[in-house]
Length: 62
Image (cartoon, rainbow, N blue to C red; front, side, top):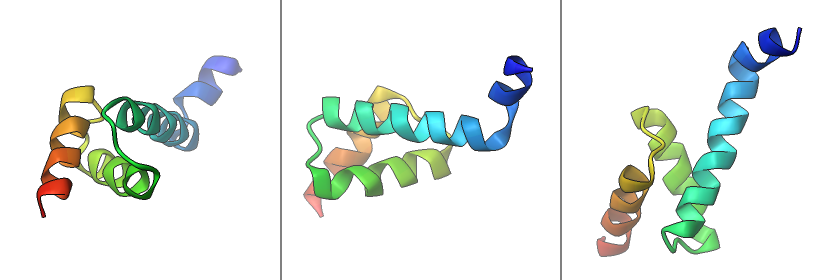
């Protein structure tokens, strides 16, 4: 039962969003940018530290 729950889409998305928020904070994103960065990383299908850091740097250059 627990494994089935972990495999559902909602739990996975929630976990990836939380993981992405932690990575964005580690990358030095301020609170105003974290949600934007995480949303984009999830849309890109890449919630890795390197990708999140690249997104943060790109947004801050704009």
